[in-house]
Length: 432
Ligand code: B12
Image 1 (cartoon, rainbow, N blue to C red):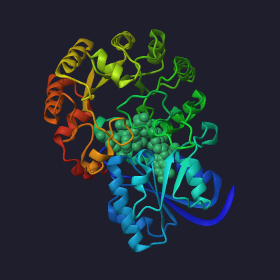
Image 2 (spheres, rainbow, N blue to C red):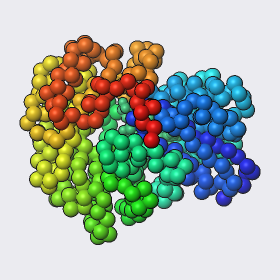
Image 3 (spheres, rainbow, N blue to C red):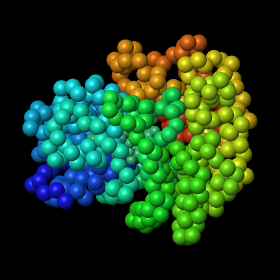
Image 4 (cartoon, helix red, strand yellow):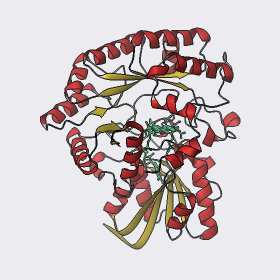
């Protein structure tokens, strides 16, 4: 264990209307505490803690490190600049998806250091004194990682928000690191944004036993009703899923779970096992009903694999939420009619319809066009700028609204709530 004297590091998760637990910062905090003697790690989350509390709490830190997606980077900048005014000696760090996608844009007044990639090893280096402007976090193995520190990230607050929304106590777990798929709309910086001399992060599967140990302990501690995963794709391998489900059944651990499923990586048997292990619902990125658009997305799914996946999950008695995207660059009205037809045909339990959003890190991001966008107010549920070769922004929004209206009795939370709320207001409403 390193002994570098008393040091206070404060980790800050940005402000957005729908934040979950800041699992990434939970991992980073736990990692630092396990490696550095006497380190003090504190945490703030913008959707619960107002600016005054965050600034006051960070004021005597040696290092303040912000976790940023594109919409929350302006928040980090605002807080970092206020901190510099109070105490210029505070060392500020930005990490997460936005800095990983556009590191140069993040090294601006107020931010001293930018981290790309995974945060644990990079933050340890920084705590030990690395002051290079850009630090790339090497991919770490699960064996090196303690479980995320859920006390630090005040997980109870997020569980309370989930409870307010769903009357269920829910939290999330990580099963794998890195995603092997290359969906064009996704901004997963670790996989897509490659820097000179930096290899793509390899996929790492967490041993199912270790994951279940954490899930059981956290379920007991927080009295959870439903378990979610942060993994964009949970079923990276049918064998891993089978092992997880068999072990869950063997332990008699019955709490239901709800993963994101890739329609191209499943078997009928996999769903039967998942149902037996307590899989309550799955979320499937169906995206489009047009074979041409599915090919352009590059996810590796086809109409056949989608139909098979949905059929098998239904046979196993698992509920299905399907996500669809409106606005791939080549999409036409005809393609969107095919999407509508497929959405109809599949008869899902819940539907989500989003508008493509060219986040930094996606193939659609064009810095000349989108750098100046006010990203705090733009996302895949509503944005006023994305247009494609054939369809205007207005037309895309009409399609999104039309589809949402068609399935209005079965709309997912985002489509239902976003239409009705003032997002800034919700931050206050969320307070437990
Ligand atoms: C689960 C998830 C969510 C969850 C919340 C996740 C969370 N824990 O906060 C929900 C559903 C709420 C969500 C919301 C949103 N999300 Co999201 N989400 C994901 C997803 C699928 C996984 C992220 C995750 O939890 N990973 C696991 C945890 C353990 O790791 P992590 O957070 O990545 O942290 C690691 C590194 O990023 C890094 N790191 C993170 N923070 C920091 C900070 C420092 C200082 C350092 C050094 C390192 C570091 O180190 C961590 C440990 O290794 C990714 C897609 C993907 N393919 O990965 C999209 C993704 C991150 N989301 C994205 C977006 C845009 C959003 C929303 C804006 C969507 C919306 N309209 O609501 C909001 C924004 C929320 C916010 N607070 O900023 C984008 C980000 C793109 C970008 N350019 O920023 C992604 C990449 C998907 C996409 N569209 O391409 N999301």
